[in-house]
Image 1 (spheres, rainbow, N blue to C red):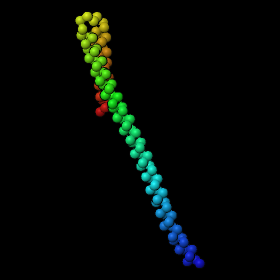
Image 2 (cartoon, one colour):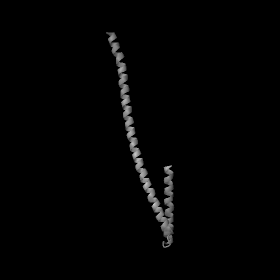
Image 3 (cartoon, helix red, strand yellow):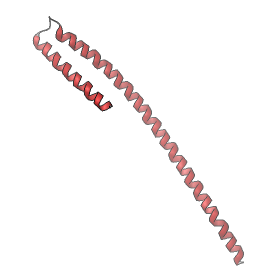
Image 4 (cartoon, one colour):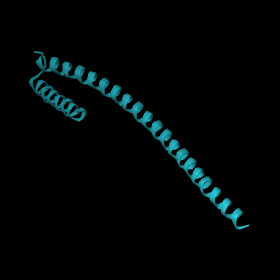
Length: 103
């Protein structure tokens, strides 16, 4: 009778180890799938933000060109031209700061 009990205990230990290993493997797999999904979402957000930054850079370049044209036009009063030059310098600082953040 004691031999049967020992045999059951000997069979139960590997079975419990197998069940524990399977559970750990499944939990690890689920975490990996969730991490992959989160990474895909972050990559999609990064692409969208990069696209938005490129659009803003184009808008800044167009604004910079417009301000340059405005400040150099002879019919524009001097105070307006000075304000446009100052704004142009601000735009350049913003663009440079953005480039530093990209690096």
